[in-house]
Image 1 (cartoon, rainbow, N blue to C red):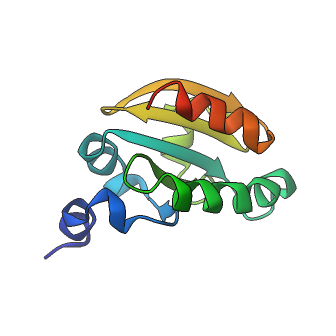
Image 2: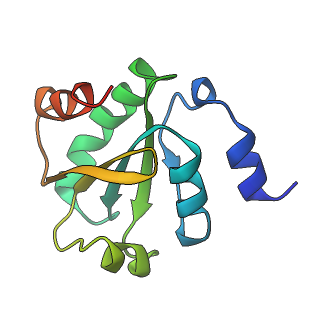
Amino acid sequence: MSDAEKTQAKKPTEYSKPVHLDEDEFDEFIRSHDLVLVDFWAEWCGPCRMIAPILDELAREYAGRLLVAKVNVDRNRGLAMRFGIMSIPTLILFKKGRPVEMMIGARPRPAIEEMIRKHL
């Protein structure tokens, strides 16, 4: 079974922490799940590190209803360009494979949660 098949075979409840995606698996993953919050980030980004624990908590608390994924923009420049990522962190919420909302910059948990709840 390929890595993409393993990713697709997992049920949403198995994702209680963020999933790291690359360009090869991104589209299939996003299309395979109803609601996915994608964090476009980089290792050197201080604000990205600030929101990482918040995203970990949200992945746990919303498991089964929301998946949290992370895309390292330094390793996946094509995805960053495709979605017009100019600042990080940038969060994009995908519903049924389509981007429905974007949040740029480190935001407090209530703001991120409000964005999620609107689409549950």
